[in-house]
Image (cartoon, rainbow, N blue to C red; front, side, top):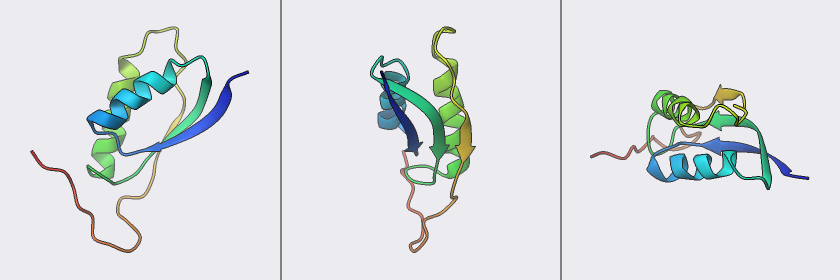
Length: 82
Protein backbone atom coordinates (compact mmCIF):
# COMPACT_ATOMS: atom_id res chain seq x y z
CA UNK A 1 0.00 0.00 0.00
CA UNK A 2 1.52 3.37 -0.98
CA UNK A 3 2.33 5.99 1.64
CA UNK A 4 -0.17 8.87 1.51
CA UNK A 5 1.64 12.23 1.47
CA UNK A 6 0.96 15.94 1.10
CA UNK A 7 3.82 17.79 -0.57
CA UNK A 8 4.49 21.43 0.35
CA UNK A 9 6.76 22.97 -2.26
CA UNK A 10 8.24 26.09 -3.86
CA UNK A 11 9.06 24.44 -7.16
CA UNK A 12 12.09 25.60 -8.96
CA UNK A 13 13.96 23.04 -11.06
CA UNK A 14 14.89 20.82 -8.10
CA UNK A 15 11.37 20.58 -6.67
CA UNK A 16 9.82 20.19 -10.13
CA UNK A 17 11.93 17.10 -10.78
CA UNK A 18 11.15 15.74 -7.31
CA UNK A 19 7.42 16.27 -7.95
CA UNK A 20 7.58 14.39 -11.25
CA UNK A 21 9.28 11.47 -9.51
CA UNK A 22 6.95 11.48 -6.49
CA UNK A 23 3.77 11.69 -8.56
CA UNK A 24 4.81 8.65 -10.61
CA UNK A 25 6.16 6.58 -7.72
CA UNK A 26 4.26 3.39 -6.88
CA UNK A 27 5.43 3.86 -3.28
CA UNK A 28 3.63 7.21 -2.82
CA UNK A 29 0.07 8.46 -3.12
CA UNK A 30 0.30 12.25 -3.36
CA UNK A 31 -3.07 13.38 -1.99
CA UNK A 32 -2.44 17.14 -2.25
CA UNK A 33 0.13 19.73 -3.24
CA UNK A 34 0.57 23.05 -1.48
CA UNK A 35 2.75 25.91 -2.65
CA UNK A 36 4.63 28.52 -0.67
CA UNK A 37 6.94 31.43 -1.29
CA UNK A 38 10.54 30.24 -1.31
CA UNK A 39 12.93 30.28 -4.25
CA UNK A 40 10.21 32.09 -6.23
CA UNK A 41 7.08 34.11 -5.35
CA UNK A 42 4.09 31.94 -4.41
CA UNK A 43 2.21 32.81 -7.60
CA UNK A 44 5.13 31.54 -9.68
CA UNK A 45 5.41 28.44 -7.49
CA UNK A 46 1.73 27.67 -8.04
CA UNK A 47 2.03 28.20 -11.80
CA UNK A 48 5.09 25.90 -11.82
CA UNK A 49 3.12 23.14 -10.06
CA UNK A 50 0.42 23.27 -12.72
CA UNK A 51 3.10 23.17 -15.42
CA UNK A 52 4.62 20.06 -13.80
CA UNK A 53 1.18 18.43 -13.62
CA UNK A 54 0.65 19.12 -17.32
CA UNK A 55 3.77 17.07 -18.13
CA UNK A 56 2.43 13.89 -16.55
CA UNK A 57 0.93 11.06 -18.58
CA UNK A 58 -2.89 11.12 -18.58
CA UNK A 59 -2.94 7.91 -16.52
CA UNK A 60 -1.39 9.65 -13.48
CA UNK A 61 -3.97 11.21 -11.14
CA UNK A 62 -3.61 14.94 -10.50
CA UNK A 63 -3.85 15.85 -6.81
CA UNK A 64 -5.55 19.07 -5.73
CA UNK A 65 -3.31 22.15 -5.46
CA UNK A 66 -3.63 24.85 -2.78
CA UNK A 67 -1.68 28.09 -2.82
CA UNK A 68 -0.19 28.89 0.58
CA UNK A 69 1.77 31.68 2.22
CA UNK A 70 3.02 34.49 0.01
CA UNK A 71 5.86 35.41 2.36
CA UNK A 72 7.80 33.98 5.30
CA UNK A 73 6.29 34.58 8.73
CA UNK A 74 9.30 36.36 10.20
CA UNK A 75 11.77 37.40 7.50
CA UNK A 76 11.59 39.27 4.23
CA UNK A 77 11.37 36.95 1.22
CA UNK A 78 14.55 36.24 -0.76
CA UNK A 79 14.02 34.95 -4.30
CA UNK A 80 16.42 33.22 -6.66
CA UNK A 81 17.39 35.33 -9.65
CA UNK A 82 18.98 34.51 -12.97
